Amino acid sequence: MTSKACAHTVTSDPQAAILSSGSRRIDQQAYLLHSTPYRETSLVVDLFTRDAGRVAAVAKGAKRPRSALRAVLLQFQPLNVGLSGRNELRTLVSAEWEGGTIAPRGSALLCAFYLNELLVRLLPREDPHPLLYDGYREALAALSAGSPPDLALRRFEWLLLRETGYAPDLLADAQHRPIDASRNYRWQPSGGFVAADPADEEAGQHVSGATLRDLACGSFDTNATRSQAKYLTRAILAHHLDGQVLRTRQILIDLHKL
Image 1 (spheres, one colour):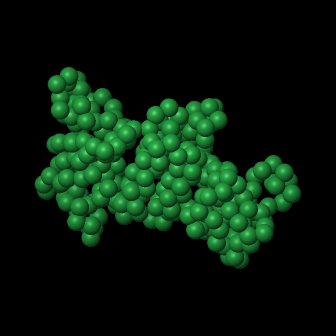
Image 2 (cartoon, one colour):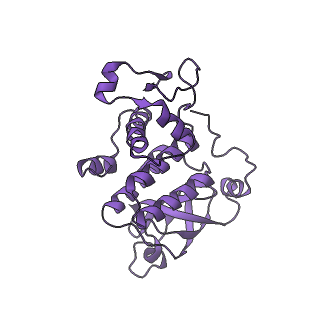
Image 3 (cartoon, rainbow, N blue to C red):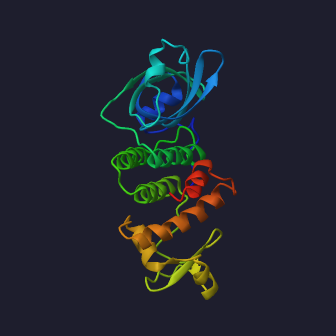
């Protein structure tokens, strides 16, 4: 994994610099990933912002029946938020609904919760990823529009792996030889891709060189590519999560949707 800058390091990103200094309010495009009760009337919200990454903030009074924040702090809805404060736990000054978005429903809603859990578990706080934010917005739109869930999920998973530095080299094997489209490979956490033996192929624990090349190009057009990408994604996530189970993914697996 590539090294990440500390949240309090001076940065050339003006939005991130303002947030780190806490000198004044900033406005951000954001999505609500998760919220937990805080004291009697407030919430601690985990926000995914476009220019400042994941940010934790206190939404004061958001649990009150007449709170303006309560009506708009909904998951999978685009927001414009105002943030202030110096500490790791910011203050949510305001939140407005951007509009124009229909939230996913049914099994697609479970898939959307899976995206949120991936971001919470893998994305460090205050680490900006504008491309990942745009990819998240696109994934929600695809799920809401009824697109095949596996296509939206695979695209987002691999964007997340690339943006966080967890994606392996898809163009060369562990010996730095170019991936051969006609061969099958097995991924090793410590070394990368090695040629699969017949036992691996019979057990389905392999991925073709053609699929690896598709993934390198961001192509998920075929069922075979998406199916093998799912196997590979599970292996990579299990390694970087130290075997911890993603709860939403287990539900989707049980429902045969992931």
